[in-house]
Length: 280
Image (cartoon, helix red, strand yellow):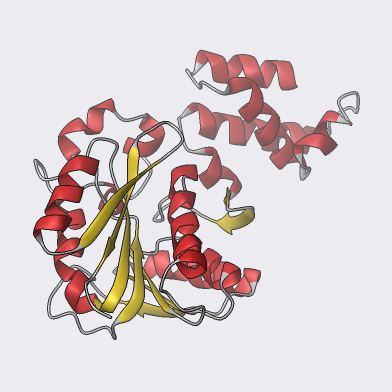
């Protein structure tokens, strides 16, 4: 079964065909990958073959594996995801690392108030609530569908988060000020959408991916502008950026009077803007 599954996904242009075939067949059998590999010689029941065929056909249509299985790992925890919510990415874990470093090394108290803007699946807010048990964590999103995923994830993982449904880009900013505002905002220019993988372009929510045409950094700038209203004096803004947005975002934050720095990922890309509102 595995050999046929891998060959099928390869014909469909799936890059990680071997790994994904194993994961999907295991999912169809109700096993993890190791459990499936330990049972390679076991004959499959007809209904098991049908389930495996169904999930492979879905993947062949380029539906993301995370939507098929309903799960994606983030910071060592499994999060429920599905259509209508952005799939967590490994690079977003850098935002968690930065907030933890602020709580450990900077002037942010352990019982700080943290707000996750545009929470989606809740992966950032929930991870921060679990990693920083003394912090007061809240999260907002305009999408009721995304917040439903986030609430279920928080309940399953045992995280205490206050959820807010509103358009976080609109003024007046009527959410209480916090010590840290963290966000993975939409930052992809829709004019390049055709160059994206079909898994992203055709399945993930465009509202969580794209800024306005020709202004991919619109929401990055919006959050920088909102920082003095959203944060207490001395508070910190931590943003994920597009791969080519670091220099412009840093300059814009500094021009707006923030004490800003650009943090680079392991590939040397400026993926995280960390900025402090002047104050105490």
